[in-house]
Amino acid sequence: MRKVMLFTLLCSACQRQEQIPFQEANLALIANPGFDGTRLGPKQIALTFDDGPDESTFWIAWYLETQGIHATFFQNGKRYCRQLDVDNQCVLGPETRGCDNGAAQVYVADPIYYPESLMDTIQNLGHHVANHSQDHCNLFYENNDDNLSWEVQTTQNILDRHIKDGFFAFRAPYGSWNNRDSDVIHQNQALNKLVGPVVWNIDGGDFACWANGLSVNQCVALYMKSYQAAGKHGVVLMHDRPEWNVTSLQPFYFVVAFVKALQADGVEFVDLTGAVCPIRDDACVNRCGNIKDLCGRSVHCDACPTYDQVACPTAIETCKGKCGTVISACNIPVDCGRCPNYEQLACPTAIETCAGKCGTVLNTCNIPIDCGRCPTYTQISSHLGLGF
Image (spheres, rainbow, N blue to C red):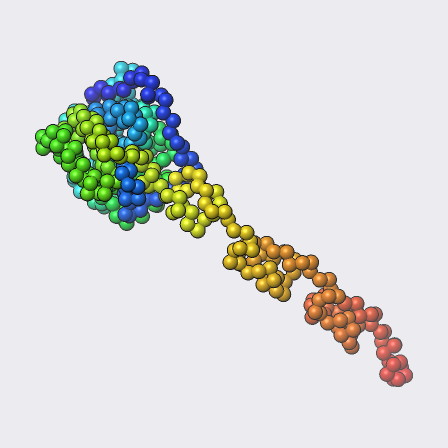
């Protein structure tokens, strides 16, 4: 197998980024449709890259870091080597399988497999790494549920060894996803942390640019046209691995030119989490106080109302006919006062209970009453004048 490309440049930028953690996030947001960039504000842009890694990946990540831009790289697991030897030769290639519909990306006779440490480098430069499936199959046509789950899970297993920020995003190849796919993924508890599928609303077809021999400037023009059509805000789809031109550095040159064009238009580059995580007003729907949103971020909602302000029954309504501590209809304990003793209860008196009776008698409240000692046989005979 070919020697993997190791990016071990000792640049200070590779060490100094600290990402905002999204701890305790349990997103479980795999849905149909997914999340695009329409919720971003005017001239807010989130950059994303698919199908990598490839030879441009590191250089794109490095350049964006120099511009203070945080991007997301959606990775295919089959690009990574499972085992390297002491000379950094890949001696065990990735797990892979054929797509159910027979479709696949363009065949590469001598593919390069990259070390997983590249994911650490990308993150150290301030970016996210995310799931783009193992083999880049069109998941809509994966007719076997186990195969569909395997495509997502196998890549996630690789990512989980490296993701540092707790942000677990997913994008389906070709953006192809439906309700059935969502149901299958939801059945896999290990994937419930994923958010997505992340889609896009700005795309100039960069992979086709290089396949068709367009120049960098021509490709930038196509993307600027899509950017304008999208209302100048949203999630941009690009590819750090050009399918028909693998190992070409055209994607890197393109990103430099495209970023400059967007900067000239006054764009604000934002993290992808701004497109997929709830804005404050959404996160606070039916919630109050200090909470965690679906991305694990702290959100300060309006103060929670007091008990008296909640549309719950009043203490008088809750305590009607009751005593002691009672749980209201709003699951709030209410002190309804001390329960009365026996003499205060609406039970028959001892005289009423003992009328015509003797000994220990249970009244109608199931309380034992001492009604006095019962007479002997002799006493009964004498009382009746029988003379025995």
